[in-house]
Amino acid sequence: MLNLVLFGPPGAGKGTQSERLISKYNLVHLSTGDIFRANIKGGTELGVLAKSYIDKGQLVPDEVTINMLKAEVMKYEAPNGFIFDGFPRTNAQAAALDEFLTSINSAITAMISLDVEEEELKARLANRAKDSGRADDADPEVIQNRINVYRKETAPVKDYYQAQNKWIKIDGQGNIDEITHRLYNAIDEL
Ligand code: ADP
Image 1 (cartoon, rainbow, N blue to C red):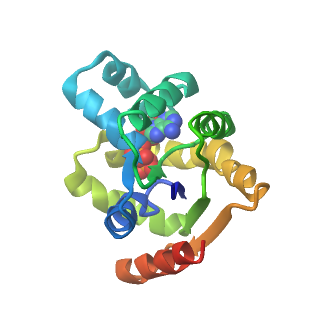
Image 2: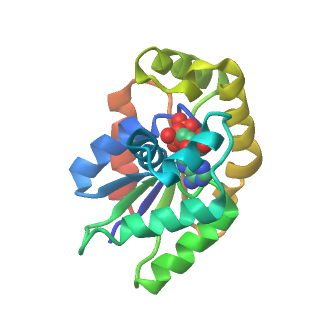
């Protein structure tokens, strides 16, 4: 299996690039943000809980997120692999993911970081807010909080994979096709 963690701050382009990678490598795209939003839309219990955190730019608690992710992975029979987008976002999630994948005889192949400057991130999120309808993109204070949470809790997850020699950094600025090709090149070398 080819299991990739696509990593980067809010607005780094994980969703956009995931769409391209899943068709090229025949992978399943699991975005915890998308799954939470689907639950919010469907008015599920999980959605109501998640919304209370997401609207403030906070992380949904680890236990809730980890259980949801596991259930999602188990929905697929004999997949080629997964792109984990927006997960893991804490070291506890990374450790839980390793333990879970080991239990199903699998593992993370690599974590790929999309590297983007903060000013560029803010501009992209403000732009996305115009048509995403996402409340968490519309409010600069919430955006700033997401960036702060990213720095404090999520950025260290990189060290977790770097310690396993699984970390790859890709320049996430420039045109979308160029970035896609950087990703293809990195993945083809795995
Ligand atoms: P972005 O990366 O652009 O901030 P996402 O769609 O990945 O957007 O996530 C939106 C929100 O969903 C996050 O701000 C957070 O509240 C919640 N969320 C997504 N993934 C996780 C996760 N792995 N752990 C905890 N909360 C999460």
